[in-house]
Image (cartoon, rainbow over all chains, first blue to last red; front, side):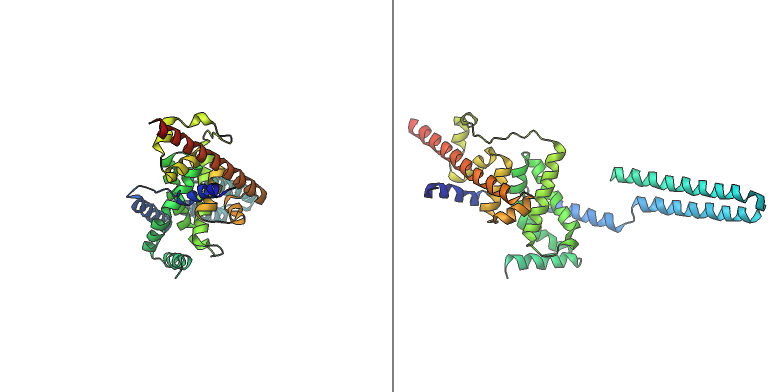
Length: 104
Length: 188
């Protein structure tokens, strides 16, 4: 490699490109701001989760009440009903979680 | 105070909640990041979007920045990853110009790139993107072979080979353009 070749390679030091967009920085800061807002406010996912949590509590409370008034012979049916309700609840939560993961 | 210390000061301010301190970092590094994204992606608009995404990602993960490397190196690593991700996503048709074809430089084009800096920018566009990236990292930011290997996730032998071939290729292309320019000048 002679001096001329080295000179050519040294020209690469001046090959920096310019992002010629005047509002780039503002736009970038705007997106960063939006990102902050998004992390600060409770997302829709948490809102829905909390609703499900409340609904689940109500269901559990109802089942407990039922178990109090039910005769002991039906206790197995009640356990089955409870597990069915909890299973459905878990399924629903998983579905919603997947839905949000898809849209994210 | 050197560049790294100034960057670190800004980073610490952003971490403590002063968002405005992020803007000087954008101003300082947008051009160099754009140079790298333009090297990896052919579309200028996409390259610009990638720089924006890189800054947003950097902001998001600023807490994880440990200061083992300089902020600039950390930012370049994020940008290269982001650009490579975009490149895979869009599945662009990559034309590898490993062997420079004389016909790809028309006389009209070579007339446009008359000064040396324009010639080198043009030549960097013509060669394979990995080679172009290696050259820019080596000469523009003066990264060592080891650092380039870390930034690009290549092995050290691959980095050495890519850089060696890139140097040979770019010299050949630049000489080609210069001789065409000279012959065009003498015709006139």
